[in-house]
Image (cartoon, rainbow, N blue to C red; front, side, top):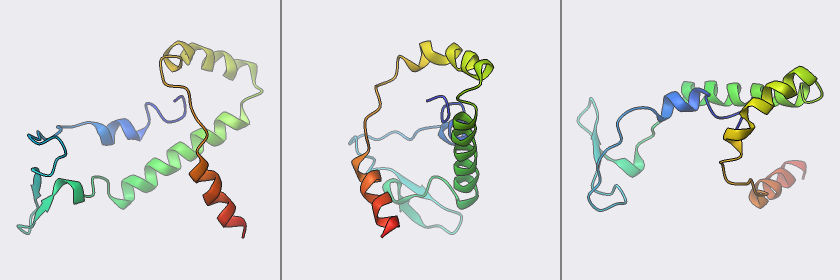
Length: 106
């Protein structure tokens, strides 16, 4: 939460959310500049540059978090965020990620 929240992700998430009457957005379409009517469920909502920038920011935050983990001043700053973090669901192990990273080693 500390490394991802308040990142570029917040800017990408901002904006109007379309209304769906059926609940699954199958009744929502985007009309692009060429006149294509694209189902909402098939629209890319983030372009390659935004994805690259987001991933760099999050990776840099995770890297910094691990580098500074033993720094007392950094830990004190992180402590300020704990009341907010404690309201989030507890994390769980991502078995799919573990399987995927095992594939990289093969």
